[in-house]
Length: 134
Length: 134
Image (tube, rainbow over all chains, first blue to last red; front, side, top):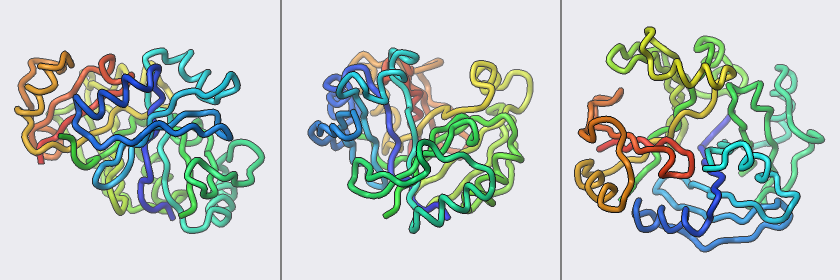
């Protein structure tokens, strides 16, 4: 069912510094910051040859990243995203097997303009998993 | 400098259950458990089309995963691994820019039989980064 690893998302306490570090110290291809007001984040994409790293920084007081950074002031890996062909079929299969889907259970349009769902980290080895239909 | 994302490593409290979940619930291609006594881990590889997930489980009382699972009993993302062409050149570049390399600073032979180094998570947004020469 799951396909490619679409991205690894890392929450960072200083987006400018983190982007500069990936560009200068790690020598990666780093994009420009993009505000995603619907998701409460500002994102910088690191383009690797086979996948992406998403640096996440809070945008606004209701950002879903605020709580994570309070618990992890240095930052940390926030979630990983697997691609699926059919997000509703994936959701129904997961729910039938007892996995919990976060929120209403209906896919939302994610930061890439595609339908996404998040799975409960307690059901997946402490790992927050995003599913993105591609 | 950094190339492909070689893998994402997830420490798990129950390797058999985690492997079965990736195979049955998430429908991924899951390998057989491999003991890596030199690294104090038993590993299961999940083969995705573009990269790998490594499920890590402690092997022995001195396993480097024991402390992580004590702090994170449900499991969690342990590290991410970026590929580099020349690990000594990468190390020297990183050290010259103030990043800390864990351990002696000399590459060790990693679980894939290739030279690896780990970078201090406090220098990289709370993310433990492995570099692997490919």
